[in-house]
Length: 265
Image 1 (cartoon, rainbow, N blue to C red):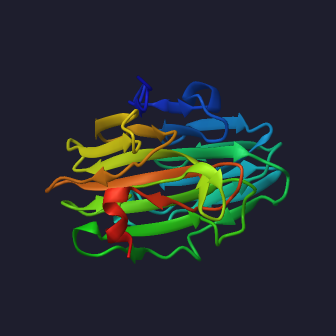
Image 2 (image 1 turned 135 degrees about the horizontal axis):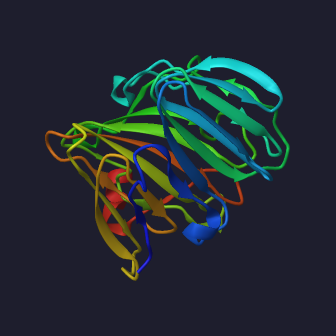
């Protein structure tokens, strides 16, 4: 059985590290740091590009030979304010010093040196509704296809109200056959409000050779190597997730699960 669900391996410092090698794929990397005020963390991204996302809290950043100053505004991700982010091309070093308790996500994928370091957000990121009825959710696009900031990365935030579904209708992006569909590996970093609640994520293929249904808790990461991957937020529990996608082509094209095709119209 594939290891798709990753619990945090601590409560402080680096608490997640998903690499292409550990995930058994080729493109997406995801790390997460939980820092206390005054603490510092540093890294080098090698031949990969990265988007550093201030999930919560505030920190002062240096990266790619520049001082970027203080990034961050929201103290709880469920404030739904647009995030402060930093894009770094391959070959960059970076350092962050926490001004408050904070959560920093490092989203990475292969880089080709095609873009310069830059701040992303909060300006230019607008919370947008997607779907209707109990499929309504709200999106903060950080670097999707229309934002030409990156070589490989696609990154977005999704807020799913209690009792609603998202990443739904069920869909997959696991073939390299553009423009019909693109191959994109994907991680989901989940947060739940209240934090002692849970959500549901299913990852499955049409032939059910892969068919996993997981209870996700606050701070979990789910890897989606292939197949459909809907999420559900039970009544009483709001769900957030930070998505990281990457593949051979920086395009997001997907195919619906056959039973859900009529819902895409």
